[in-house]
Structures are given as C-alpha cells and as structure tokens.
Length: 102
Image (cartoon, rainbow, N blue to C red):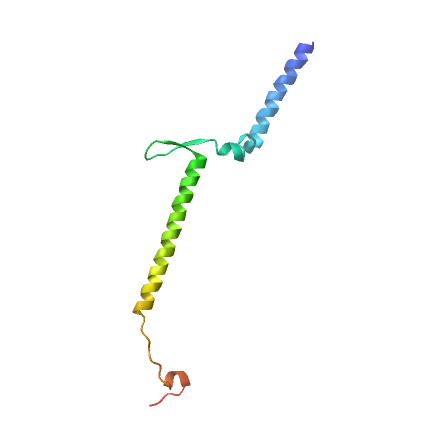
C-alpha cells in the first residue's frame, strides 16, 4: 500500500513540476555568474569564445571608437578655428532697429 501511495505522490509531483515549468519558465535560466561561463560561436570565423571574453573585446572596440571620435572632434574644432573669419557688424541696421527706410 505504501508503494502505491508513493507512486501516486511521485506522479503528482511530476505533474506539478511540469505545470511549474510552464508557469515560471525563467526559473531554469542561468544565474548571472553562470551566464559568463557560456561559450558562443562567432558566425564569421567559427571560433568559440567565452561570453566574458566577447564582452571584453566589444568594450575595447567601443573605447577605441570613443577615442577616435574625441580626436576627430578636436580636429574639426581646430579646422573651424583656422578657417573662421570675422564679420564686421554694422553700427546701425534697419532690420534690427525695426525702422524700414524707403
């Protein structure tokens, strides 16, 4: 009799576990520490990389791009200063004073 009740209990436990997996699918996802241990395959070269290494490579690329953007911004500012010319302002302008002369 005990084996029969144990079998029923075990069967109900399996059903409850399946319902739980269906209701809470995120329960089986990896923890943040385990996510970095996953290997990914680069589609172009076919090399296998750890996620942590891939993130580090992307960070280096972003840092290089930021450095290049700062350098380009400085060069543009330098060229703007070299090419800028001063415009002499008139002492009185009809459009500024609001008077229209005919």
